[in-house]
Length: 135
Ligand code: ZN
Image 1 (cartoon, rainbow, N blue to C red):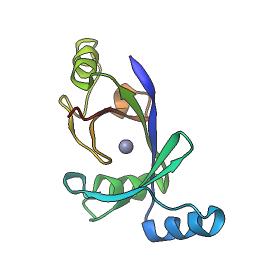
Image 2: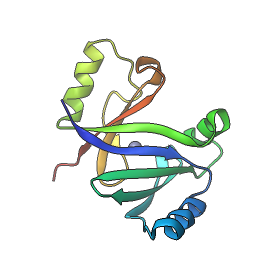
Image 3: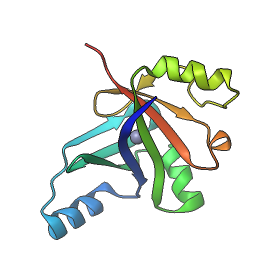
Image 4: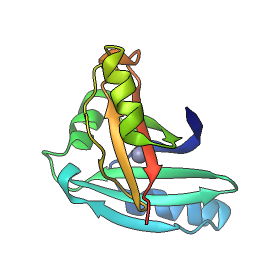
């Protein structure tokens, strides 16, 4: 059902700072940078070998990321698993009684459809499921 870990999401206050650090330390340049408007979040994505890390910073104080940082500080925000068929996976979880933040896929960063499982249903850790958009 799960294909691979698609990426790890890390909440930070400031994307410029992390960009500077990764550039200074490893000469690492971001692969993509975009705003996910409905989540009020700016995303900076890095590819490291086969892995992807997304740094997430709030673009507004109302952003869920701003609230997360206020409560828990910067750090691990979510783990994203890639699945073959996102809607099918969501239906399966719903049927099993899992609480979902998104019952239907929505648009995420990096050309993917995503959906979140409620942390109350996943031991306090936010899990994102994603699928690569079909043409
Ligand atoms: Zn993500």
